[in-house]
Length: 400
Image 1: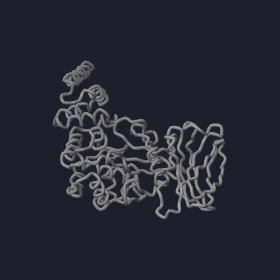
Image 2 (image 1 turned 30 degrees about the vertical axis):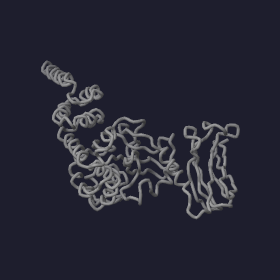
Image 3 (image 1 turned 60 degrees about the horizontal axis):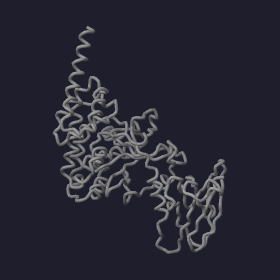
Image 4 (image 1 turned 45 degrees about the horizontal axis):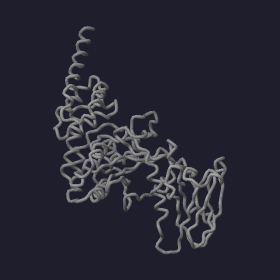
């Protein structure tokens, strides 16, 4: 019995070696070592991964190699060739069919269109169905932006899912949500992201494990358009990068794992995506994108009102009065602006690693007195009054 087991293992090793010996025909060399490792990780399921890689058309082979190279261990051990082939086939079908998809850079296409999963949700064969569901909405679109708006506008009526805290679980895959007609913000974000990907629009789930004031987590979707990432939601605002939560995101804390903002990634990135429903999971890769959201919020605050009666109130926070000159002396911290007893603004000051010209700026009414509140380096609340005239006013605060 032991001899037979050894022979079988040797045969499998030879098979894998022979496959590798061919240097994975049609696959860029950068994936070869990664594929070797994935095949070992897959164990008995390596035959399915090999089959998927061999049977996919040459023009789609890099997409398959990408998925196999970076998939989590749970997937390497369980996913079938048919599952993977359908996802890859329809991802490339969308790329070849829709004009905006053709222009997507290859690295973005692989990571944010071909990827079959977002977080830790169940692995489902949603790609073909979603392609057929959503292509009718984008068939006449000429640009990526038009296609994004069309999917965003129609997804709720197409899938018949609404936000509801009575959903079975937070991390629902598309068909789990569609069966119940309800989902959490995470489930809605997964639905929307998959719908975007199905028609060749690069998309990923983004979110925070906990808002700055400990109110809990929130997730949403991002789309890649015009050379960069922008956010939207299942229930969209009037434009990209506009939402009720931007003011909260503007106070996110980059250095705090629990209060930063992350964008999920299929391949390894600079961090992992903290999943509040299972904090033990570390295999969901993510980029820490907090700076982009705090910058977006500062830009919104600095927008000039049309009435001409406002000026800039610029707020900078430093370590102490003796260290208040260089960029590296600045401290990132949350603060709030009050007019009398009423809070009118809130934001997060720029820290040592950000451009010196990037300053938290509020548009306030001229010739008034405002109070800026923050917590100093000793954990003690402080309040500083500032008189604003008819010119830009810069307020310097000190943590010590």
